[in-house]
Length: 272
Image (cartoon, rainbow, N blue to C red; front, side, top):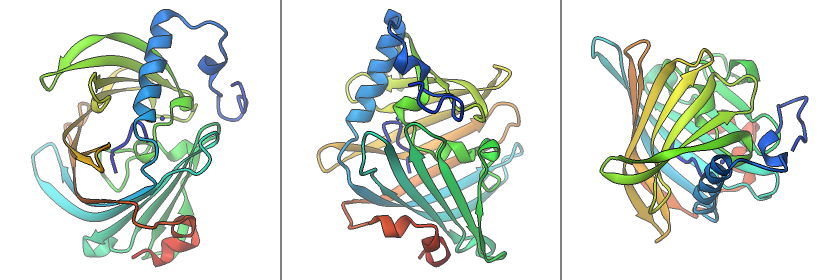
């Protein structure tokens, strides 16, 4: 997952429901707005065509004292079939700890309407829909919100190019993106993408009061199928609480034969 993993994984239609992509309908963007949009679009384009993938995920939670707890998951992603409308579908399945084993989070991403998310809790033996207004809440006690696991579809933000800058010893574009979803927990996000491969290396998240809330650092990328970059490590630090969560991905596999039926709501209860 990229968590994470995939930024790529990114007009007025539906404006009263979702907020719409006002930027997409503007007849004239400023030079910096157009450049920011172009950078985000290119990053998304470079990830097109992966079809599906699977990976293993280790989630490490740290409190402000440095105490840790670990969770093991599996992640599955299916690329959207209709590029004009659909985003990707993803499924996260817990293997441990014991009290969370079998829990699963299913996410449907869309371009022009709010994403759908459901979580299955074995203890309750039921599937619960995550309401749009609750997607800014923490996912199973981690520093990642539910909305952080949505594919960052280009049409769901407006953009601005800020500057060029080095990050992790690489030349990067720095862009700002503003979520159009009125229920997002973020007012804006500042994103660093390396100029050569358009990979996301860092994101600063600002809360609704425009205070720096979290920083996500992404590194240890590996190339698959001579085209698709995936990060093995993502670390989210919450500056307001002192807590952090690290995601370690491994065993990436592509084009494994996943189908829509593997991402149905009914499949949550039998996810293995």
